Image (cartoon, rainbow, N blue to C red; front, side, top):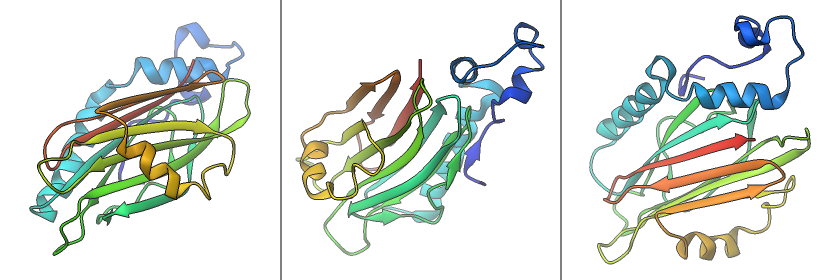
Length: 207
């Protein structure tokens, strides 16, 4: 995908590293090396510049500059998304995020409406034991100076979020500038900046 940044950290890449040559490799090994290489070759900065470019092309108004990092040891695949206010901008949600890659996308408010950018996306991946999990990350950049930006995240079973969007809005709205989730060896750390077009960053890991 054009909006994923960084070389995928797979067994082939680990085979080039002395500590892994000729040895069995685990999901945790791939996840560990992806985490260690979170800024390798400036991939984090490249992702940031890309989404800032999307913002420049979009123009003024509330929007959220979203960055998601995958350090789970395997590919993350998009399974759902939801817009409470606003919509995805000119670059789509990546269908897949490789292990060791940053995904970058821009969520924008609807022109002419007094509303902000409030949305969520769900990616599916495996936990440390190889069981599929759904990873939800959500952001709120509301319209109006009297509201604060919010970051939110959750880890759940496969398809568990499909019918929960109405109630999920309240969880997002009652969150804060940062949010974390842990379950079965999986972790998410989500954070959002202040301002009317903040950067939202979510890091998804397996330990």
